[in-house]
Length: 391
Image (cartoon, rainbow, N blue to C red):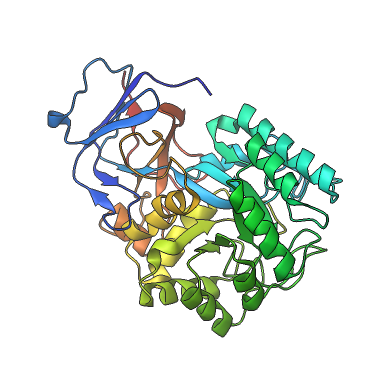
């Protein structure tokens, strides 16, 4: 994408969220971006705001790094055959999500399971979402499933071609931990990160993956640790939290009780930095355009985590666990933001307090690479105040 604003200034920000779990809120009221990257942030009086090509008046709302959905199943373009739905990615943008990560293009009709077809499809999927970004959303796709017959050279080919993620272990024909661990090692050698399906079967051809197999396989991300859909028993979830340094991925498409158990266990173990969020859609439960916002609100309301920290699960935690240049308010990072405010008539004295009571905020604007991609959300409840492009 080359459609970047040379200089963007966002002023009159009421609250700045950083995505950094160690310091979720920053002092300031202004962010300056140059050529689609964050240049500086703080108080406007201290920043160079001259010569801006685009100026956004935030009107006192909250600015956060754009939300990241760590677990989606795209197919091609902005269409999903799983639910026969068009424009689901654009709809998710209206839920504040600016980056998505594929956990496998599992719903592609006629998806190949042989090694040659698997490699070809992975490279093709990576390419078509690199070349076409629906509504500007960054979709990291081309996540092959582990299939019998894949050898190290296949992973080398994919890694050299730009494939960066392995789809959910367990959804392909490789079902045992020993083989999966060997392939995960090959993937890691060539720069690819891996995720494993956790819990009961979700689609025909998948099966139970318990804590023992998760630990044996050694993936970088414990995919839907709260089940997708069915969760593991409590003792196995607790065991995974205790034993693993992998990311604990909590998804909208899973078990809410298990999600809160994971959060509480991670907090007790001082591992909240390993908690990340996804939707696991499109799936049998549908497409969830507001799924990430709903997870933030649910975990804050029922998990006893302040909302500013909960937003880190959907931004900076995922960025760090996934090695992305988005999701953090940091110089040089991509200028991807969501501007939000308390929903009209929602309880709570502030937007964050309202979220802590389980309410969704109203999204007023999304920005990707320094370019305004959407204004007032058609999906969230209407916000009390709306940012405005003034120059």
